[in-house]
Image (cartoon, rainbow over all chains, first blue to last red; front, side):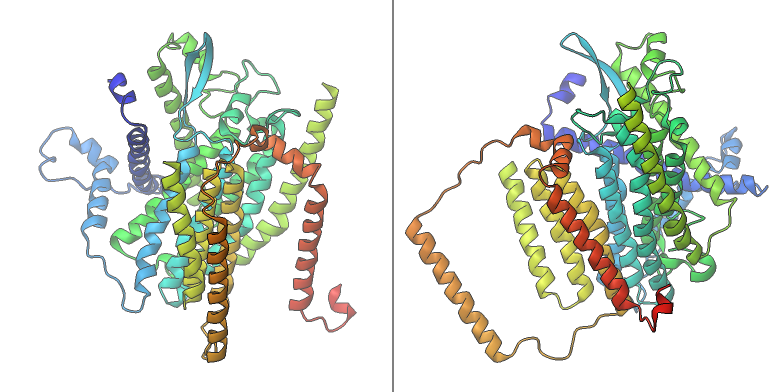
Length: 387
Length: 172
């Protein structure tokens, strides 16, 4: 099986790998929408969706549990989005109106290519080497994530403009200002991490794999523990900027249904609307993944307990498949916990006003990020010269 | 394979660049510019200049064109009613283009086909991030500082020009 796979032409293998990742990411994003409804219901002390079931399944005993969990609602929603009539209002700019939701999917599904989501040990020339599980290993790792995900703003701008009506347009203008404002703080907040992992004289890298390697210390040593403990301010600024970049509450200015009806997607319905929706959840999943890699130790199960130690205890060091699955499982578990945090915040905090969003971005977060960067640059220089 | 990709990206980039010039709709022009930048980034990536490719996408495609769109939408820029070029300008332009084309054809004809000369393999040290950073802080420090200073002046200029100051009191 494995031999057959590795003898396929390289291009076909890349296509298969990419398709496999998208086939996991896409349903995960759909499942997030379901989780959002169930979690919001749980927080507001109501049952949430619990009545949908296909008639022929209802006869099987024991299906009631799944029905009350709302699992069939997911399929019903998907079917509805796919088969409902997809109206195009008469006043829109048709070409760009249809283009916008398609464009929204491109950055959402592309960023995942450079995010490592697990690791396994392989033996190269008698040495054990930790190999990452990822689609494309590029030296500029995080920069590629930032670059591609920054293209996500165009689908929102285009959707609002092509809709040719007042509220979507306001939403898209807000989106373009907001996303650019928070990109600055986001980029500045991760610089201390890369200052720390790039020792002077080294080749220099922005690879996310190296970041996880630096957090894989055995036992609680201060210099190899998860970065959320040693760089809490960076993590906080990155977190806030991540909320703003993914348009999640309390920063969902482009949508803001209280004052803009539905924001940039007011005129959209059915399948095109669901594409925006899935793209937003994909951004959330990839963003959470990047946060987990940068600050929460990636695929390492606990601070001070790296993956290879756990794999050693379970005697699966020489089985790359099992170790890879273990790493992916731990990573996805952390991402799921982080997505729960996203939803928790959404259903707890009220939305900011637009002027507050701008004030937070430019007057609070940006100075904080710059001060944090200067502090860590000085501290790291002091540590390096002392050592 | 790289040749095929190069041709693909080159044609794509030039087509989008033409789209920027010939589109009547300012928004469509800006979107063509975006695609053009992505094409150039693809060409950089083919040259193994990953850093340059992604910085181009991040800064220009991700932020600068978004600002272009923002301004176009905010000002609601419509095409003017005046014809852009008069008959004389079109004739002069055609003449100039014709002369240029003849010059190029004659010159390339006299020199003979150059053929595709393979480039020497790039210095591997120039491809890594640390070396690039070191060059920016040593050899190219002055240009970087000068450009940074120019951008700062431009930014201050925008603030001064766009805000109307009645007197010294407003500046405080």
